[in-house]
Length: 222
Length: 222
DNA sequence: AAACATTTGTCCGTATGTATA
DNA sequence: ATATACATACGGACAAATGTT
Image 1 (cartoon, chains in turn brown, yellow, green, red):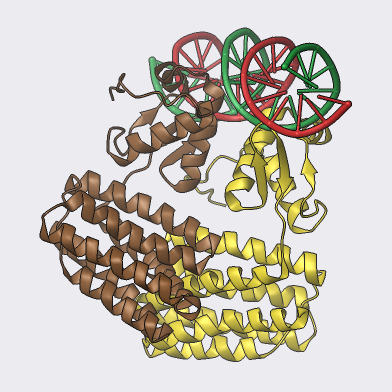
Image 2 (cartoon, protein in one colour):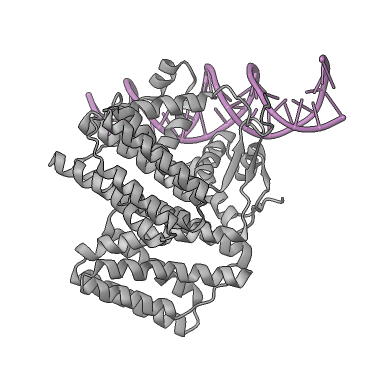
């Protein structure tokens, strides 16, 4: 209900982007709670901008599935259920598996080396108990593969799904990450498949690399 | 006749939706050509509404990838290349394969019968040389499976991809559909896999059911 | 370099609709 | 059933930003 008054003003962004970024952060980190009602005039006042860019930002967040508007009636943060993990991870796993499939066909030796380096830093971060760094390297690993696959639709859909997953973790797990070194091994297996240009294996392991955390999270909650 | 209580208000379509629907149609059928520059004030005048709902519609179409805006500069219809088929179909195939996978686990006998009936009408439409009807039944077949899979993310991403494919066909093929009965057989094979609860087979055939037309279209153009 | 033309971005008042008393 | 309160939807004017002369 209370909307924070303190936020950094990056200033170089358009009012719309400013509103979008801020609202998305507030939704993902749970500041704006699931089911909460929004008032564009209130948000406009809080962010120091007019209602128009607020409405535009709300519309974008609605497309992403974070906000639901009932035209002429009300605007609310979408609800989120524990079972939603089962809706979020599978399409992400499928898309990332496809990306691995495509990437394995065109990846260069140099790119493989980069992935190896990233995965090593990932492993070290886990060993050193640095969950934030580990998460960053994990994201880097996956986004690098997406970049190689070079498909804007995969990129867009993946990032939307990952944002929802991030929100899910904040809301239900307080973003409390349990790091497993299983992922390091899977990443290595994918890299191995890349060097062998074994696209089916790369895709299969990539899928598992996303479905395994889904099951971990799901069983943790039940 | 009983009138559904939960029927969302027969809202006269808002100006925004009117603009969105019209612009999307014009983009997909090629009335608005790839690379064409848009002027929101002109569109507003043409559609008899103000710039605000036009801008909102443009924003939605930008998220879908049909329009590109360069803030403060210009707004254009996105370009489209022949090679884009190779970016569009694979993620769609992956997502639909996932839907088939999920559906096969929970589909009922009654639903299987419905699919059989739809596929039979599809076959008849092809035999009778009715491409529009055939397309409708094909869409019905796939959307029914998506409905069973019951995953809003798959739904949303699939429909966006299908709209882009439709645009592609209009722009490059004048929507000239070549109907092959291969698809009927694939549909039947998917139904068979459903009855056997063979999710892997259902997914595999579903993927082929989308990748085959991709290759047909691609080789037709090269 | 600066003023201009053009197009998009923002503001805010009002209309429209929806829910509630 | 009607009136009223309220939130969103829309319209039109103005501001800001960009490219050009």
